Image (tube, rainbow, N blue to C red):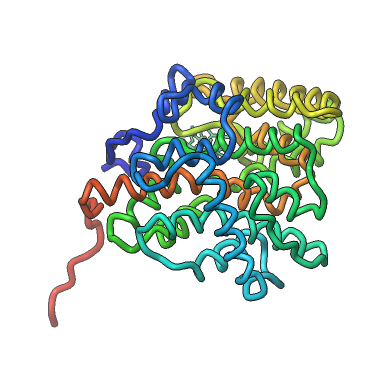
Length: 355
Ligand code: ACO
């Protein structure tokens, strides 16, 4: 019995490889640092999906299909936005999409994610949704729909670096959930809905908002040690640290830190974050000398998304915007595998005698 399944191999994949000892992440052959610096959103989608959708066309075709699907998704905005959180708006919106295993269903997921999350961010600010511009690259249009004005090229590049960096990561909890659902042949939208629901948890994709809460509560470098001691004493988990697979620093942390550093005006915030990071790592090493607990992807995700003026309530939905590329590819890979996922359990309850 292996309750966290860490020693269970449940899939063969051509998509990504996480080497937790070396601190290396490969996505479709590319080290994540290279991918993050070189690939835009459409190119990453193309690379991840092409083996499963030969009809996908070129990267330019992907941009056109995403634009068209954003326009279609905007028709649903009136039904989803209002009174619910940003991630719930995304889930509600996705649940209205056509649910099958086609390319059309697949493309609608990232396209609609951008529309629904931008509209939900605006609704939370009491603002009306902004219609998509189908001719723009996806990431640029999502930032524009969220803000009401065009983001700078540097901001779009940083946003794309984030989305691409988190696009896939082996058999993490949300991807495994998506593959289990896909194995039942429920459809790609159902698989993505399962993925996003798993992502919501603070032990998975819900961490970066609380990372900023932690930085806010610490407030200034001199308060860091006392704050961390108090948090560890009450057995709190320090968000943005530790990982099930990595025993060294998560390579995505530095890819994202580099992306934030390329944005103007972020030096002071990065220095503060580095100070807190060093303090946390020191305290975790002292408390868990036999368990390497290092910085994970979520720590610099928080700093990057904050620099892009994305509200922390939207962070998990923004993560889903990137990760849904991986969910769809894994779902299709699982469908091709053709085997229903159905592990065993050991019954530890009673057996009642009939009266
Ligand atoms: N802060 C404080 N203590 C921690 C942390 C942390 N961030 N991470 C692990 N520990 C402690 C555990 O409580 C455990 O202590 P115990 O033996 O006294 O109970 C010990 O370290 C060993 O824990 P692990 O076996 O390494 O933890 P596990 O593999 O189950 O969990 C996880 C990994 C969930 C990521 C954990 O490190 C954590 O909760 N981190 C904070 C949340 C976070 O950053 N999540 C994002 C992960 S990245 C992603 O999913 C995209």
